Image 1 (cartoon, rainbow, N blue to C red):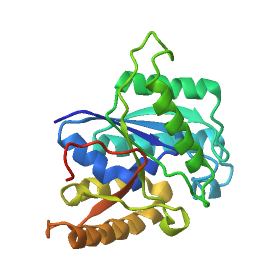
Image 2 (tube, rainbow, N blue to C red):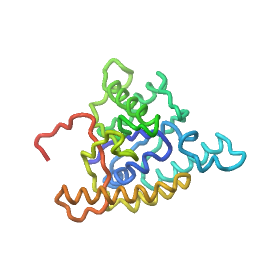
Image 3 (cartoon, one colour):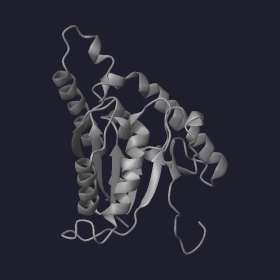
Image 4 (cartoon, rainbow, N blue to C red):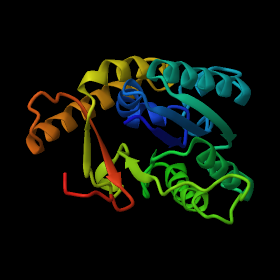
Length: 238
């Protein structure tokens, strides 16, 4: 059944690299997918743009916003820009209120975000913790009583670039074979970080291999990995 999914992305294109195939799949199945871009990654994830002589913060921000917007159009999701400063990122009480309000408004049954540890990027764990807290506050009756609280959404972390160094456990493999070409087109909308395209193609192929080995569908070619951060409640084991 169609529902609502929320994705909290630390930087302009994290949602594309790490969950683009899953986003495209859920959109194709009729889900409403909303992505929060906490920051545009101007300071920490736009190195190629800063090689231009006379480059400015404002120009890098403009380019990164356009890249994220084009990628989202390909995937079919909606973007919500928070425009925070990155490297390092600060979650103020005002930012927390904004994230809680976002969850209350889109009312997701699934939330995707970063994992709890990433020694190579200081912003990703910050966004993870902010998402965990906002999810809890969004379900508290006394917080923002003018908007009804949400039922507890399932919370998943997407795969970091350095899996083994980030305590990430690939517990769930989502088959994105049918949606990989859409993800590829979205990745190609981010020329600032074009070096990541081949990395994530290979990663999706490797996770596809793992899905074939661990599942019953021998036709899986590409997959994305996720880790669950809250118990999954079900009538029977899948």
